[in-house]
Image (tube, rainbow, N blue to C red; front, side):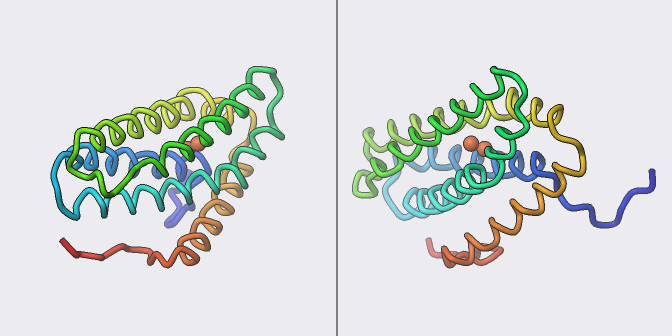
Length: 170
Ligand SMILES: [Fe+2]
Ligand SMILES: [Fe+2]
């Protein structure tokens, strides 16, 4: 088993890394929410963009592959639950009003968004991803990972994001 120099991330590693990044941003937003100023606004923009890209690549690529591979009723149920939870996130995000930054209302919304995303990402990591590892083989997951990475790159480009964000405007 010779270690390869640059092995691409498989689908689950890629999605899990996305989750970790968004969790961290949501933690920062929770802390910044009660303070006035640009920090919470900038965080919210980043979180929105990251969530949009992540849920899009899941809905376009990963979820359909999971559904296709799903062999048990429970797996199909995981698929539908995940899609519905994305819809809930889509409903909550537009309610995050930047004009409210620094208020208890905004802090409450930031907390609800964080709990919601953490619950959803947690279910994927604890239930859907382990099942996906059983339902799909290593090569399939690697190929899917490549597809996800490509689509993610395109979406970032469309969104005007560069690979590294260095907007330092505080
Ligand atoms: Fe998801
Ligand atoms: Fe996810």
